[in-house]
Length: 554
Image (cartoon, rainbow, N blue to C red):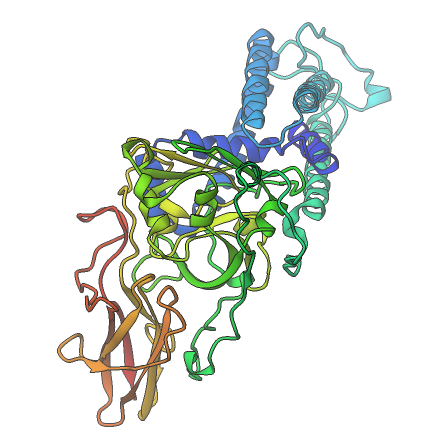
């Protein structure tokens, strides 16, 4: 605990020394076999990270106890294990982005040395240190050897011939004090790290200066050399959402999800800390003109806003891992154009577009999706503000119609065009390679198990089929025996979810009812009623089925 406390304290004081505990937890996530990770997420849901952290804490305490025992009985083995732990900790820390190598190594060595020193001091105080000789304490000065309440003196343990300097109470007092000091250091370190972290500050209002000019865009330099005329830079914004796109119904979620409520699924325990002044986005691989962008370069290109619903492939039917945001950014097709990429030039070598995060996480989808006219963005804004750190600051990918696991790279630093053989992060963990979002709908205004008063009940919620739109929503109040068409709000955008409501006349008879909802997308395809989990049950590409709830009417 002392070792972790000191390491965490240094992390709080110097952000380029990563949290060793977080780094180790991140290494566990990265190295765990894909099938096990997927099953764990399915079983634990959003509790997966708390369970991981708790398991690591328990494991750390067990290792500490083992080292304490070995330091008495087999000190050389204990020292060897400490050395191994140092190597593991440094390796895990170096896997984090932006690490100060020398400072991190010194921190790990210093923290473990301090932990060893505390362990040695405690074992010496208890008379258990190797080589300790018997000592018969002066009973008059230190208390009776037969006094079980003495916090200071125990002449010898029954199983040991070694003398002791403190009694059991004294040893517990000393070891408890050491643990408390370690915990205090952890707390101070976490507090300092939290104050310095980008998550601690609210996202700033997004400012796109009209005078922004590219500073390092190689493609722009080539255009100047060729005498090509620079394209006109436009910054397109959307008007406020049409009031008719929202339904004033009790329990209906906002049309645009506030950033603080936007769903969050990550493979990282802590958002990377990125200096926007040194950050770069490179476009590489099977491209004619590899190009690199700074943050200012992107702001200097034509930008636009787009209303796009994002959903997680792990979302259960009726689940909350779906949100709708107003994103600001540069068209992904414009970024690719700077690298000489067009739909006509896509070959087998450039069939897949891979997004890579600063922490090495990858997603991948077919390159032609970025060039088919949809508003796929290299995004740097959400709901009029800069991206929150947890949602990918400074830049992320937003691709309408695709689940996040194949497209939504946060903390984006690299776009690579490659062949279809490359398997991105979640594909290596048994998910399907193509990830189109399935047509889905959800009941929000009435909850499962609700007891309703007889009368008119407004059954409403949202339906989504990004890039296809929603043309119809139907509600059943008799477990699917009959369906009633709901009233739809105006479609904000085909890439955005759509609100609906059905005014159910529940005044005719009391009793129990099974409510269901289904949606039909803009292509005329109605979502399937076959209930299937996101992963398994015949598929690994998202859940299917009707959201079903049970209510009673009195």
